[in-house]
Amino acid sequence: MSHTGLLNAGSLASGYTTPGPLEFFLPDFSGKHWNEDGYQVLLTKASVLLVLGAVLAFAFLRVTSRRGEIVPSKTQFMGEQAYSFIRNGIAQDIIGAKQYRRYVPLLVSLFFFILINNLFGIVPFLSFSTFSRSSFAYGLALMVWIIYNGVGIADKGFLGYLKHTTVPSGVPVWILPLLVPLEFLSNVLVRPLTLSLRLFANMFAGHLLIVLFSTGGAWLLIDATGSPVLKPAGIVAYAIGIAIGFLEVIVASLQAYVFTLLTATYIGGSLASEH
Amino acid sequence: MGGSLNMVGYGLAAIGPGIGVGLVFAAYINGTARQPEMQSRLQPIAFLGFALTEALAIIGIALAFVLKAKNG
Image 1 (cartoon, each protein chain N blue to C red):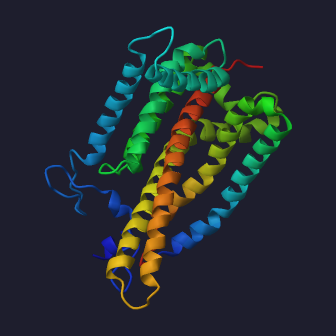
Image 2 (image 1 turned 135 degrees about the horizontal axis):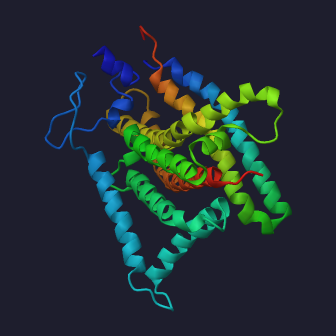
Image 3 (image 1 turned 60 degrees about the vertical axis):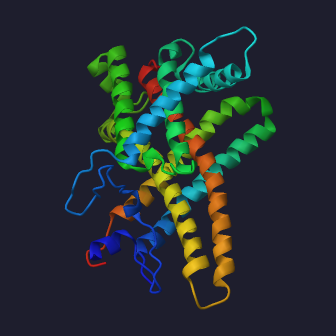
């Protein structure tokens, strides 16, 4: 119990339990619940939502591009706008006009996949963004890590890429013993960590805020007794919760954009020629 | 009332990234105001700077949940 209390950040004396990381341990579809003995659940809402996100991203791009017409319909226009935003706004600008074409499919599907999965967080009845479970974000970052390192190695050879990524050009030789380990640390080891943590922690914190304001508002309205200001405070808490829901739309799109942008930057950095 | 001192620490730790993100977007707005045609060039740079600065705050919130007092 003390463990649960610690994870849940404690409960108020009068009975309101503040939400904590345990909110994110969803029960299995078989009905079994994650427990402290470490029972591994097989299929949760999060993994189903991940698959649903992939299906929806595919369906969106398929429907908007199925019948390409010279005078685009509304749906085709919408899809093309979104596609060209990634293609021209991210891929072409960051990777460079010569080589960007190969990476457009990756970046477009990454963007829509992450965007749809993030938006699940504010869809009623789903209300859980997949990437607020860190393992999914780690998997995505691992994929990006393999891709940008693989692209660099394919382009420059193993040693050539290692030199390209760890030895900055134009610095005096005597400072290299200090810089090379630092560059290796930041470019190879820390990059996937920050990439996944950024996505995960944004979604995690957003979901936690919404849970806090909605359950706290409900508790203040229904259960809290004592001072007469508690019920109006519950209404204010609900209003703030709704406002945070709108903020989450912005955060969801922003994180999808930033993840795609950083992926493009890393690929572009691996491909860049010495200057 | 229970709670965790970690969150107070996280609040303090978020001051730095907060100022940093503010500086990034101040420069972006300034640049766009002076030269509106550069907006599309500045936008990826601004968001890249924002993402890298924000990483500090994000690592902070992750650590605030991870690090626990032994007898808390």
